[in-house]
Image: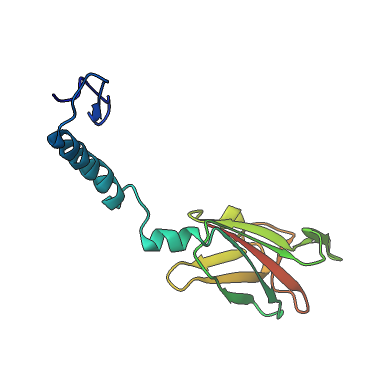
Length: 161
């Protein structure tokens, strides 16, 4: 006699003491498990691909570069970040200038922002994983100057996936 009761989700046999399990009951239960669990494991929509695992293994990284004083520093990134923060080692985020302006030593870039927080100091090229860090005046803002490639300064770049 087949099972008196069955599980709610998969319909697997739940035998009572008075039931007499038959071989067909076990085969049917195994087929249900194979279909449900096997389908779940094989689904790329549910499980991570090798590429997904590689991406997730790079959740965060820190890289450094030394400023050269030229127009922009270029840095190859280990992965495409969703957020990138650059700051000058041993410097505050902003320092006043003798001309009344401000040198900005720390900035944030967020993927998808067309104006990079309105400053344009960091540009990231997806196809080559290149980041450019500007040295010079902010576009559209007076008195503020990018200081992201100052000669003799080491910069720390924090990447978040």
